[in-house]
Amino acid sequence: MKVLVIGATGTLGSAVADALEDTSLQVVKASRNGPVRVDLEDPATLDGLFDAVPDLDAVVCCAASGPLVDLAAVTDEEFAAGVRAKLLGQVALARRALHRLRDGGSVTLTGGTFAAPLAGGSLGALVNAGLEGFVTNAAAELPRGLRINLVSPGWIAETLERLGMDPAGGTPAAEVARAYAEAVAGTAQGVTFRP
Image (cartoon, rainbow, N blue to C red; front, side):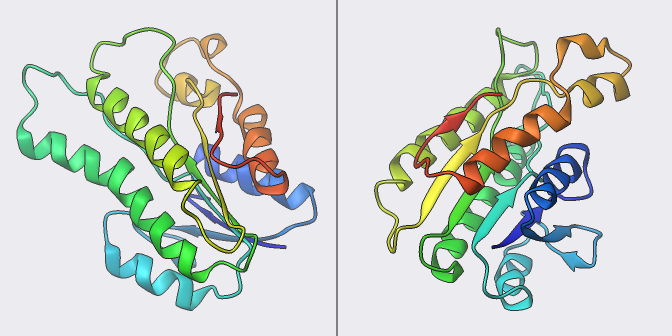
């Protein structure tokens, strides 16, 4: 089984790639700066991605991130850029993948979960809710036995540590990566995993 992991050089993406490699899957790693280049904000790189990496069984996107923004101060342009980066970029990826994956293949996207309302989290909440709604509905529309799922972790422990915060409030990336491996190897369809 051949799996493409987008965002494979990041904290979560590298943990996901490792988890998938541990299950003996053939993993192809892609990122903005890797040997296989892709940028969710650049549709041309998405179009070229599936030409560069044909015959895929699964696509996993861990490249999605969105900034915390001050709702009262954020500009329309900044807000739209956040929606484009995490929501619309992943939707564009999924739309292209459904034409290029082998029959029975899967797409796994990345959302997020806030345990409670978070200062600066309005953009993230909008994007995450949009992704969940998209995956739930798209699952009913996919042809050829294709599957789509969403992994929506809370804070990643390593990210909190990098931000100078207490990592105890997060989940280790390796633990979150198991949810991605389950989404790829299992039979779930239209499911939001919350590790």
